[in-house]
Length: 218
Image (cartoon, rainbow, N blue to C red; front, side, top):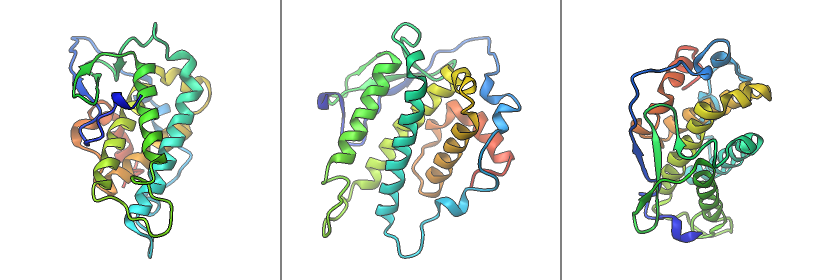
């Protein structure tokens, strides 16, 4: 599996635009779903670095939590993310993610395979003592924030695929409040520590604008 991952920080493949003249407003942008949240107020105090806490430790703990929660949500709808129904890693009209391997070769893979690559790669990083140190006296590598940015880049693609392709399943499981709150937390944390590029949030920019308007995001 390690051969599929480019650990240099440029992992994650490319976005291949596919344009369409017609567009249907997705469910996750429609009231009341877009306004559902289990968190009231703003995420600012939740994402800020606490006093006396090391910055890299704070990044590591939160990345680990985001990875686990997103993996859990994907697991709840993964039976519907199949090779037949999701032959590409798409995020709505105009966005298809291509996987980039360790030799910087891009390829089109089905969404379940792409997400499996992402989750396996992150799990490998989290388990690597040299990247996510857990023992006393071990320092975080100088490239740690770059690695975290790469993880965020991939996780927001998983968010985007679920929102655009499987939000109806999220609704049927009555998970929209929790999922929206997790996304708002993720984006707020990404903003606080400059972990997300503008181009990475484009497929979910309309939802982010709604959440900004609701005063949820920091």
